[in-house]
Image 1 (cartoon, rainbow, N blue to C red):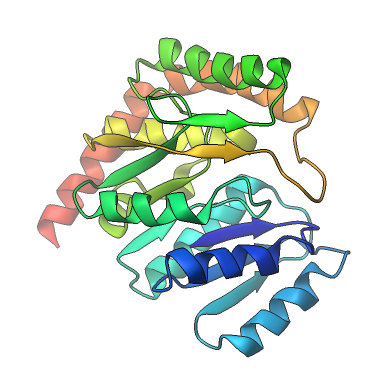
Image 2 (cartoon, rainbow, N blue to C red):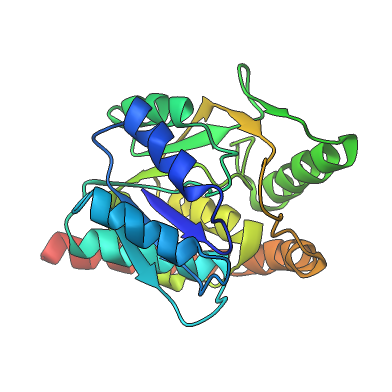
Length: 246
């Protein structure tokens, strides 16, 4: 489990408690971007309480969601984990849904925690927030030709062989567009994306990381990905050839 953090001191302990209750077999890696509110100290205490089950990558500053996940993927692949899962630190992703996503991953190479299929949804969101989120996924789906309905969500599980095949280090997007690009690259590599319904709950503590820059990036970056489709396809084909030779 990869959990990026920046000033989430009130959330990390309840997050671990939920994971222990619903998915006790999961190890957790926090990727912290130099939090200033005591988050790192709280994580350090959890590491002492659960040695070998909770870890932390400390980074020098706020380097972005996308690079945090790439660092976490690299850390997990180096240690031969068979599955890696993205999860928010703000408790918007429920631990009870995590257990179901992991069960679904036994039969699928990628499982997307989806708010926008039957059985999924959001809780405590304003109408504007729902319009922006659903509109963003619809926008990306139309331009990139993807079928998955929740492309911007960040509650996703990946088998390690999928991540090795698409090489997340090639992803240049940040914010919510990182989630879109990762799924787009998996799709172009011929990997099936399975959606599983989740309930997304608005954060109860801390501040949202949404910004105007993230929204602006999402608008232009989707078109850039569409233009990069031929190169991404060529890169995926080269990686398949190299994998077949090794």
